[in-house]
Length: 334
Ligand code: KDO
Image (tube, rainbow, N blue to C red; front, side, top):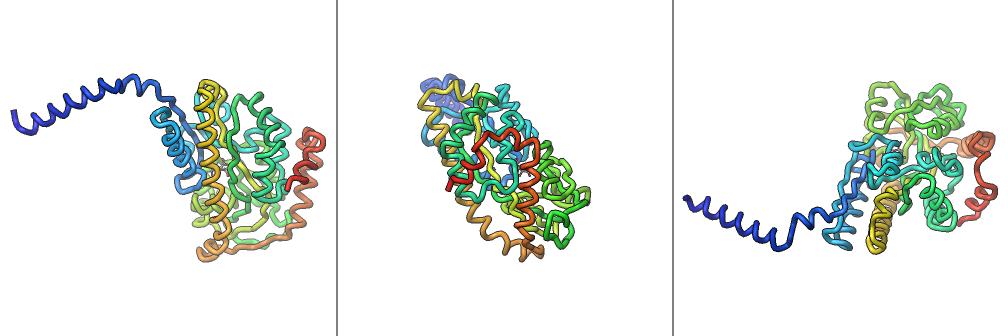
């Protein structure tokens, strides 16, 4: 027997003894698996925030959870996460107001353009009584519990070819990519464009090849997904102060102990805070970055956009199900 083999053998024996003494198989079994699925790209703050979530949980509940982060919609397709969570096939995701509005129609108020004023107001709305009431309904109707509100950014229009855009009329005929649901398409059409559904992961190629003329997303997402490489203009319509919600399947959440629930909620809050801080900071610097990259950055007639988009929503089926007084309560939140 060579010396090396001897060492390996001793190491193996030692390791086996150690495993036996701490009962690793039992420990491994008792870990609660938390699978996360998101369409976010790795370089985006709302992808990186999941590592903050994982680290926070490892610190507050060492060895209790096995957090598995799946980016780029590699586990579930964009928009299918809420149904997967309700079925218990997925533990966590970040879901949009548009996902929620499908099952909680009153939530469509947050899919409407020019309702929420700024990120600060957004946090106050969802961390205050309006959020508490609506999240209760979300949990009852969707079987998922929102844990934290993530500022995704303020959505802007990003065009493949530069164009003078002052009012919604100037977007006529523009094939504007939107995520694939009728609530998203309604927003794209309300902006004056011809909304075209496409998953986030296909947008870069769509812009490159010209199957779409533009897309709308917050500036940090335009940077992280590199859409600026295949577009020539950003029109600062600021049409939606967008939020996503870290949500957990009720099946998974209800299986946790009260202490674990508290730790998972706190980890989600820490993740959102990390995203929000970094995203806001980056968003404020990106106009300069895009200009340096050679893009035109223009500001349209915001009053014209606001009036037109707000009127389109007010006259739509969506506004009919907004609870009486909710818009006023949102406006009064400061
Ligand atoms: C998008 O597809 O445009 C969107 O911004 C919609 C959001 O709700 C969210 O799904 C986001 O993509 C992804 O997380 C990728 O950034």
